[in-house]
Length: 332
Image (cartoon, rainbow, N blue to C red; front, side, top):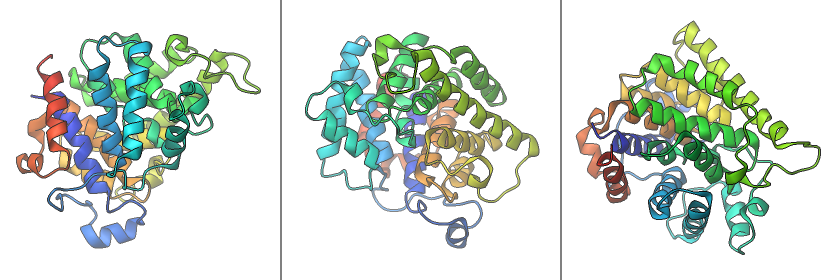
């Protein structure tokens, strides 16, 4: 079923469909595309944003790191982010948090000193999907790597927790978890991990004024994500009211809202992947990030064959997406 490829391509497709609708209000989007949002890729190639670019940086760093440890992953990930920062293709309105952090990472300082510690922007989890897809990791490795890749730029505990939840959602769906079981399992994960700080991966990132312990630091992030997941559950119980999903679960500019709104868009119609993308892209908030996360979920569950076959050759970076997905699909 090529679930790794399905998730990576699904993320890129959502990113591309959401690219033109980001920063537009819902009424403008509906006037242009209808209430279902954009459903066809445009351009040849169909361009993506920094979301897909940074996702590829994370995925390729995972492969280059070899046996995954903090010591093997951090330097190659740092270099991948720095290469992205100076690339001529980095012209897709990248987030200022990522750019500021990369500027500080460039001088070789410890990454904890470069991290933008007060930011929980969605840049923390828009790029983490490869950590969920990589086979053969222990739960501790997956959690630590998900939080480390977030922390290099976004040091807020909520961004760390949202990244871990995104990675595990992708992993569980690709392993065959039924979509209706996803939200309860994520909610239970919040409770289980509430006071777990991965010091071997994060070091002293937690240390800041008025924070007494690493457990106090990380618990705030899990609590905010748990509340966001509860809003998704409430919305799903009410059924599909139509309209702008950002009015239901948040605009997606911050990590826990990007996760929540992507989950909402996905779980409403988990067997209709193109509908999922259109719903995510037809949103008044961070449309490309919402749609890319939702596409990653749908593709992880359904595999590459769920997407229109012609899209594979039209999406930007198709060669890199194929290369990365093939590595992991062959190891399943």
